[in-house]
Structures are given as C-alpha cells and as structure tokens.
Image (cartoon, rainbow, N blue to C red):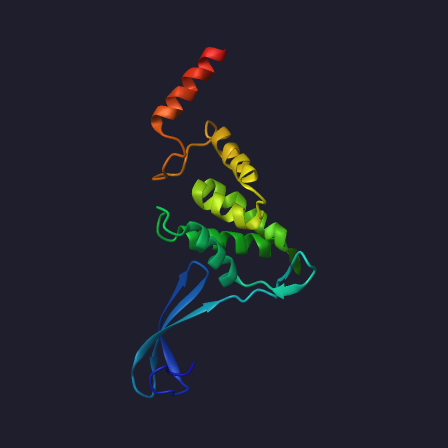
Length: 178
C-alpha cells in the first residue's frame, strides 16, 4: 500500500479490526511516519444485470443507491436506512449465486423493501419503475397501500395519506355497513 501523503511503497500495520463487510487496518508509513486507514473488502465475482431490452451490464451498486435515494429524497428516514437497504439487496443478489440477474428482479426487491420502509418513497419509485400510464394506475397503487394499512402501520414519522377526520369517517361508514 502506497502512502497517500508521500507515496512511499511500504507501511506497517498498527491496528486491525473487523468491520461490517471487511477489515479496517490502521497503518503507518515507514517513509514519512504518517498514519492512514485502509479497508479490505471481499470483491465478489462479476454479477451482470439483464435489462428489459436484453442488454447486459455489470451490476453497479452506486446506480442502485442513486435510484433509491431519489425515491427517498426529503423523507424522514433514519440515517443510513437507504444504505442498509442497498446493502441488503446487494447481499441477496450475490446469495442467489447467479451470474446474471434480470433488472425486474432487482426492481421488485427495491419495491418490496421500500413498501415496508416508507410509503411515499415506494410510490415515487413505483411511478418510475412501473411507468404508470395515467393517474388511474397511480391511484390504484395508492389505494392498495391504504387497503393494507390495517395490516401494517406506516413507518415511524411518516405522514398519513388521509387526514385523521377522513380516516375516522371511513371507519364509521365501514362499521355501519356491517
């Protein structure tokens, strides 16, 4: 490892620690005495994404992260939630043990996790991923979220899609029908 300060080719390891996905090493340059940190991570074999038009391109985690971050922009999510989501998807893709993965498989994984993480981010991602043709399709997707609301509460800090008064009115009309 070359020293980032003086370029000297030799250094000694002062401290090594395991971190989430690799090893963190604290080093000291034998030339100038400066200290710096290096990270060692396992580089998994190549994974290729098969696009809808049958093109193949190498899996790019940064591209995945970019799409998820756009959907989660300005949402009240915990720090690191988006990175953990991308890490989880990447790990699951490599666990599949396939050399090629369909882009639709990755999109479905993102949709599934965003639905559990944040409803608004889910709708944002779905509107691009599913290419809604009109407002009716978007409304159906929102209605499906509202329909499952009883099964799973919204994420912490997430605003309701309906006002409290509207929710109460809907609950009252439902109880009258029964």
